[in-house]
Structures are given as C-alpha cells and as structure tokens.
Length: 333
Image (cartoon, rainbow, N blue to C red; front, side, top):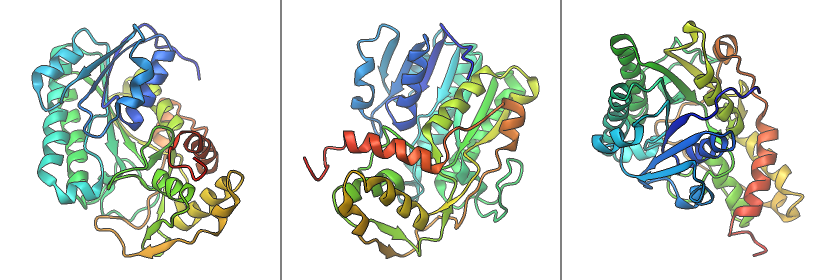
C-alpha cells in the first residue's frame, strides 16, 4: 500500500481499545501525530504503554460524553478516527441507557467538536449489526433491515447523524461497517469478550468453549490489518463520490463457528498437541444474534481501492502466534 498521509494530527478515540490501539501503532509508525482519547472503560493502558514515551503521541484520559473533553482532543486536528463506543449486543440488551449515552450522545459530541474545529475528515466505526433482520446475503450497504438490539440502533443513528452533518455543515465523513474484527490486542477476558480471543484463550488453558447454538451460524471474520487498510484508505480518499459514504469492512467470506473451532485447533496444535482433543460445549442461541453474516466489499473495492490481504486462516495464524506469546494464562507458565 502506498502511504500518503504523514505529519498529520490524527485523533483516535477509543485509542486504548483493540482496534484503536492498532490504529495508534500504525499511524505513529508512519510519522503522524496521534492524540488518543480514552476513558479506559473498555480499553487498557497496557495496549498503549509503548507509545507513552513517543513525542508524537498524546494521551487524553477522558470521556466522549463530556463535550469540553471532545473539543480539547480535536483542537488543530487534521483527522478524527472515531472508535470510542460501548460494543457488544448483549451489553446493550443488559444496559441500553448507557450504551445509548456513549454511542449516540458521545458520537454527537465528537462530530460537533470536529465540525467546530474544522477537522478535514471524520472516519467512524459503524457496524454490521445495522443490517438487523435483513436475510439477504451478501450484505450490501444500501439494503438494511430492522435493528435487533439497542447496540444496532445506536450504530445506525451514528450513520444518520454523520449523513446529516455532511449535508448540513459540509464536514467529510466516512463510516466503516465492521464485520467481526479480530487480531492482536483484542482481549479474551470479560463477559463481553469476542468469540475468537475467548476461544483461543480457553483452548490454551485447556478449557472447553461454549458455542451458542449448533455451531452453524456463520460470520465474515475480518482480521485487524484489513481494518487498518480501510481506515487508511478512508483518510486518503480524494474522489468526491467516495466521501460521505458508508462501507462494509470485511473480507467477503463467511465461516461457521464449527469451522472456526476446527481452524483454531489446527493452528494451536503445533504449540500444544493436547488442544486437538478438547471438546466444545453447545448451548442455546444468544438473543439478538443473526444466523449468518457475509459482506459485499464491492463498493469499498470500487470507490476506495480496498484489497484485503488476510483471509480467516491467515489472520488466525497471526493472531494465535500473538496470543500464545502474550497470554499469561498459557498452560506452560
């Protein structure tokens, strides 16, 4: 990929989280100034520890629900990569009020602050949950269903606000509908941990993962480096038709949970042969889940030049190597 963005001031909200910390790392390596805004409700200081002594990195410990904090973060910024949010469908079902407060009010604060600061472009994390009860496959950006969770509603509202701000105030926005992102720095711990790090962690610890349903639900699992590419392309885009749009951010293939388990065991086996014999437990389906998810990435290819490099297997190999070397719960510790 030809890198064209250098010496820019980039605000990354949620910069201590999984995706945010990877973005901080990438843009710092490419000679930019990064301002990380995070309140550490779901992010971790360990994810950004190595940046703290970097003169091009600034940490603002604060909450996007506070407008003054948002204004401070975006002062003289060129770009905003907005990733601060309360993720997880189950979390939103358990606590819809807080999810809405962070994901909608916080989003609006950042959008307004960016507008007032004349930020050139506002790229934000949208979500595949926006497709709701639509059964059409693959998912195409212009065809969505009814939301199935409070979280999905908040992410769709983000898209509506971004569209209104673009048309009313002229701020450039691009939304990236993430499909099941995984990779380094994604925590395997907590009630709302994503399935891939959770399964890897359990297997390393010789524990059986619980699969919701019969394991035939499928997802378009998307490795973190594909997501980094999309964020970079969203900042680089010059074609007017490519701006003020929403794009699927995925690989364009779907994998069932049973296939995922098979791949994880296959790639963990060289580290620990016993993992191949660990059984899985099958439980009930999870509320708010859709059976299948598969993205069309044609729009991103056509308008942004998106060319994802990591399929599920390549991404899993990279992830498992990282987790094996970083998890403290390894069996041989």
